[in-house]
Length: 329
Picture 1: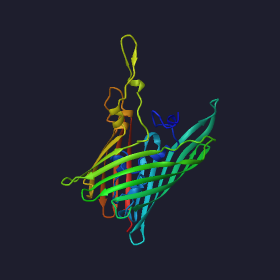
Picture 2 (picture 1 turned 60 degrees about the vertical axis):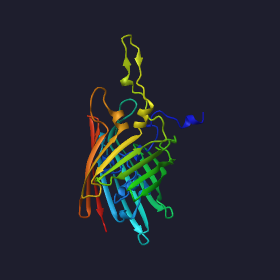
Picture 3 (picture 1 turned 30 degrees about the vertical axis):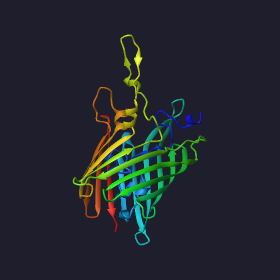
Picture 4 (picture 1 turned 90 degrees about the vertical axis):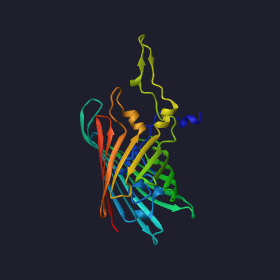
């Protein structure tokens, strides 16, 4: 009976502040949506895993904009500053989403005017090397605000990450806990949980090939993460229906994200990713639509970095992501 509180068949629509799970940058989107092990100049990475905060982020300012689905737009901004003779780096980030304008009606169908919805989160992060080891521990504190029509809510959450770096073989591994928090004020008296996530990621740069691979296992706190799709049920000649079976191997895949970055340290890089759960949930029966695939590139021009990504959300819905990062040093 106690375990039933934590067991669920799917993760959509069960928590509030779902915008916290949207991708934070075009680079993240291109590599499948979630990458936790980029330890370099990318100051936006710390919005996802605070353990990656490092001195290469010093005085880096990133601005990202996403033209999302259904007229929704959202963006992120991040900045890091190194203090105390390049030994301590502090990070600040903002995530914002605007759901657009809606026509309002009462229960009798009478127009009540238009309304909007938007949400935002402000984060402060810091990371510290554990002694002289290869392990780093980082944390974010997030303040969250949400306004949906006449209802508003305020919440707070923390992210925590433990990162391992092996510089000899250019390998990183990390364990991250995200969005651990509470609603401080509710929309209408009902307290809702936040979208807690536990994730594990690995990545490595190949020795003789200019390629860095990424392997991410998301939402490890939820098993199974998938349920059968009624649209894929099979009906025999007698009218009996057999529901789709989601086995152990499919559940493992639906926790998995693959990504690769070609020329990761170069002035021009190519990024590819595949999100198995997105591809499985958004595919159309008996039709190839390449859901789950994402691709993008990064371009460095002096102190300016430009990123672009196109992500595939079935044949009916795609999204473009744009990002700029400025070196202010």
